[in-house]
Length: 113
Image (cartoon, rainbow, N blue to C red; front, top):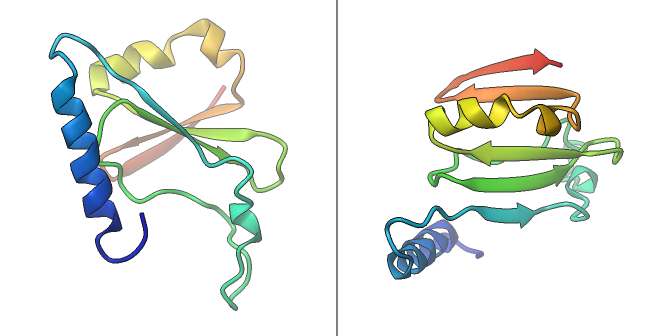
């Protein structure tokens, strides 16, 4: 998905796939950007301090990104707000994470567990 139209092509493709799925089926997409060595990219102004995505326009997408020190993974999760509330309360899930960062619209908050 390169070039000026990369996002548009991806967006159209996901919409077309979504039209094939029955309306009563909840679909989650998992994407791994781990091992892409994103923190090693240097565009002549130094390596990044933090790697993230632009705003995600789709719900139910989980993107795994390696942390800066390569000792773990960040999981970028998009869901409807009421589903996210349930997801965040899952005790088994919470036992695997150090912190949960919530970005609702443009307001981000970091919650230490």
